Amino acid sequence: MQLRYSFALGAMLGSPAMAADAVLKLEIPRLDVAEYHRPYVAVWLERAGDQSHAANLAVWYDLKLKNKEGTKWLKDMRQWWRKSGRELDMPVDGLSGATRAPGVQQLAFAGDKAPFDKLPAGDYELVVEAAREVGGRELLRVPFQWPPKSAQSLKAKGEHELGAIALDIKP
Image (cartoon, rainbow, N blue to C red):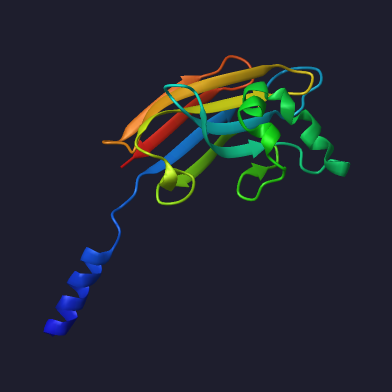
């Protein structure tokens, strides 16, 4: 019996500390326009002080076009393209995905997995950029601290190509 308790206690003490988690809810608004195309969307992290690129989180674009023609329009997300997009060979596993329909989309990130597990403590900005063929372009920033000291619920609101954005971070 003592052996069983010792093993259980040892397993608890030896387990890694709970890591922080981040959940992003991103609204793509339904637009009433003559020619609608789903927006290309890039989500990435920047260091708050100098706005240098820290990590990519997601890039949604048209993956099904022949001869990778969908990559031709990635540069319309100008800020993301300048920060890191032009250096990537798309598609990238775990990063790129198909465009999303209007509505609320959700992305969840575990703090003990890439890229959050490698982020040094500090101030960051979550950046979301959307660009649409025959449409506009919009960029939103949500500042946050990593790792969080307490649960945070941060929000931003777009006006054209992006709707409400909510970033929930918990330690």
